[in-house]
Amino acid sequence: QISVQKGDLFMIELLLERGANINAPPDPDKGATALQHAAMGGFVGIAEMLIEKGADVNAPAAENGGRTALEGAAEYGRIYMIQLLLNAGAQT
Image 1 (spheres, rainbow, N blue to C red):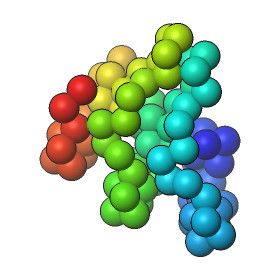
Image 2 (cartoon, rainbow, N blue to C red; image 1 turned 60 degrees about the vertical axis):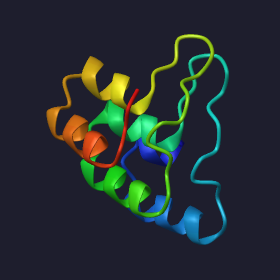
Image 3 (tube, rainbow, N blue to C red; image 1 turned 60 degrees about the horizontal axis):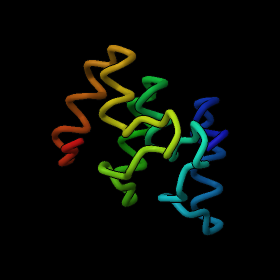
Image 4 (cartoon, rainbow, N blue to C red; image 1 turned 45 degrees about the vertical axis):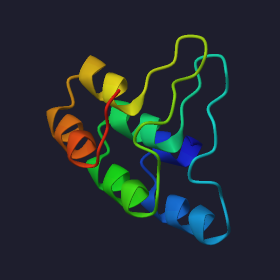
C-alpha cells in the first residue's frame, strides 16, 4: 500500500509477483487498500493494473475514517478514476 501511495509501479509489480495480497484489508483506523490509495492519489495506470490483477473495486472502507475507492476518487475530484472504477463495476 505504501508503494501505491508513492506511485511506484515497479515495486507494486514486484510485490505482487512475490505473492503480496492485492486485496489486503486496510488498517481499521483510516487505512486503505492498494486500490483505494490509487483512487485517492489519482494513479489511473496503477489502478488499471490492480483491477486487471483482481483488486476488489468494492472493497469496504476502513472502519474509522476510511473511503471506498469510488468515494476516495470522488472526494479528490479524480474524474478519470471515477469512470475507471464505474466501468470496472464499482457500486459504493
